[in-house]
Amino acid sequence: MVIDMNNDTCIEELINGLNMGKIAIDHLVDKIENRKLKEIAVHQRKNYDDLKEKIMQTFPHTEDEVKNKFMLESMIEMKTILSDDAKIAKMLTEGSNQAIMTMTHLLNKEENVDPKIKAFADDFEDISKRYIEELKEFL
Image 1: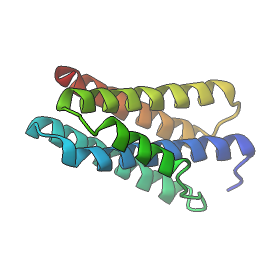
Image 2 (image 1 turned 180 degrees about the horizontal axis):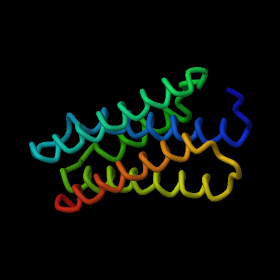
Image 3 (image 1 turned 60 degrees about the vertical axis):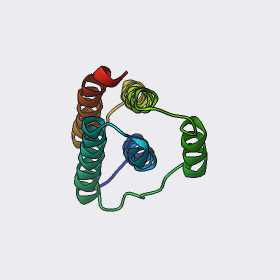
Image 4 (image 1 turned 180 degrees about the vertical axis):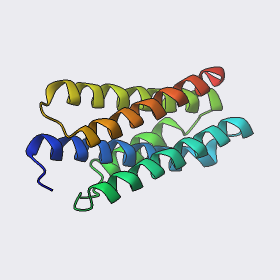
């Protein structure tokens, strides 16, 4: 399978977005007090992990590297020093919105993206949208 630069860029951004979502949830889940909100976050993380696994199986030569991990972790810790569930729900919602915008922008910009990659990006967007809806009650 030959992967061109457009596809490499899309896969890289997709994996990075999934990783960032998982890292954010990992840092936030222990700070969540509401049981239902915690379940939503854990379920979202599992969906991100499952999607990442499918991508890695389909494109086994993909690098699994997290960009800006330290910056993300530091930002999360700073924002959650004095935090409540509403603020955490807002952070998760904003992260999911950012993932949708990033993937949509990338796919609109890139040409000739492999249909499998486009389908994975659509799955990522669908997962993110679903959790945005579920998080609304906690805002």
